[in-house]
Picture 1 (cartoon, helix red, strand yellow):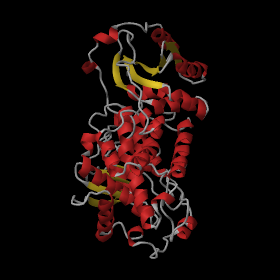
Picture 2: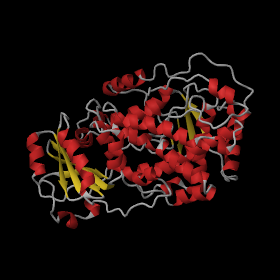
Picture 3: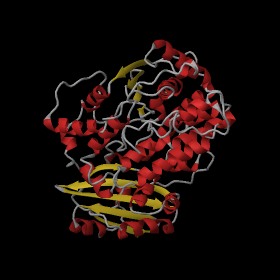
Picture 4: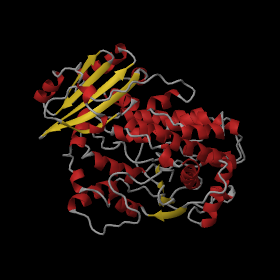
Length: 488
């Protein structure tokens, strides 16, 4: 199989205890797992293929063997100037065992979709109408699209056995070993310490995952005999970014999924630019001062970011009696995805996204009434006209409305027209926000799935992009493409 998805750490929610097993599940959870497992049918590699021993050993060796693991780790440590650090432990588990581990800490109440977070994000269009809940969407993402992960706390890599093809298996392990090296060199918890919003988390993950993507491929290409200037990195980036944009535009896909996959397309591009010119010193600088926003990732490491003035609250004067259940800055990628799912072209949505200067989304609740408000700030009011027009001209089943106010657009989403009108009528120029202490606002953690995950958009054996050939090019070009476990 081609590389699926890797995650650099265990899911932050629901619970994920190392080695924990739950022998029995409730009927509700079992129904959910049956649906998830059905998507894994056919995810195996079918008939075993003979091992290609004409490849360099590190690209065909059995990644379950300690000798293979050590050989790959040592070569990566030399490449990244990281010799002397302890190699992580490595374990292999089945797809079913992985699903049980991921699901073991699930609060069944979070699968009903009746929580305010799920209802509010569904209203705003961040998860589809068909999604049971935010937690269910996260679990499905982790189970269907994760092939390996590195756990920072225990310094252990877990490989989920999906019958990977040679080269892909070794690059998969290399990607995770690079995460272990990153943690030894830069202490990843410190790198991500200030990422307390979805936007900030995706930006930091773009450095962490982009670095692992770039260096794992660079390592493999070097073993295959390619010179650094023979690799067409731009073509590789274009492939993964085009696929990601298609996913973001699909209304049947959750925007939180494409946001989780963003680092493997645009973070990959960002870190290629960092690494190929300044080299290892530039790489270290990126980890020391990672971008704060997705906007900085898409505009590149050489672009001077604008002066951001992020909104401090989603609504300056919320309707009386409503409390904030979750609040976060979601970032420019969510703006792009919303516009695409409303039918806007890539070029128009991208141009509008580049006018983004900040946002804040909150889900409010009063009794059984749930309302979502998304405040998006633009460089100037003309950039916000497109978002206002698309929201107000859309045919979404839920009640939504957008109000242009200066250089900001307030998007309201409610479960009834009466509730929507009540919120739209609230004043937007109140000074209430200035007296609401930041500590009083509740941030429920990032909504985007997982800590750090790797979405398979590129496989060395299926999407090679080179400017000229090498000793092993014939093998690479004729390797058949394998079906991805989750489709494209």
